[in-house]
Length: 90
Image (cartoon, rainbow, N blue to C red; front, side):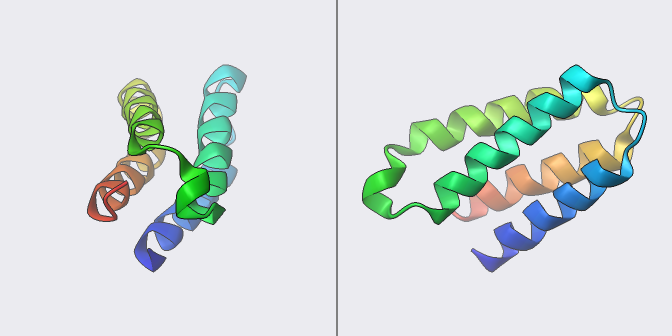
């Protein structure tokens, strides 16, 4: 899971470095990041089903697609987190 934590940290850095991101898109990414962080800190019993994380993966992918043209480094960081989630079985 440390790979996932590293990629989440990278996404936080990319988000912090993206100044021209529209407020709605920034809020979406920040909300999903906060949800994923809570999910990772929870015990397995508290996590619920993997479907919850899957929903976040879908939301992250959707955000990555929307950001691709204007913010390719942020979109790449989002996809990196999606990949790490998949590798972690989340």
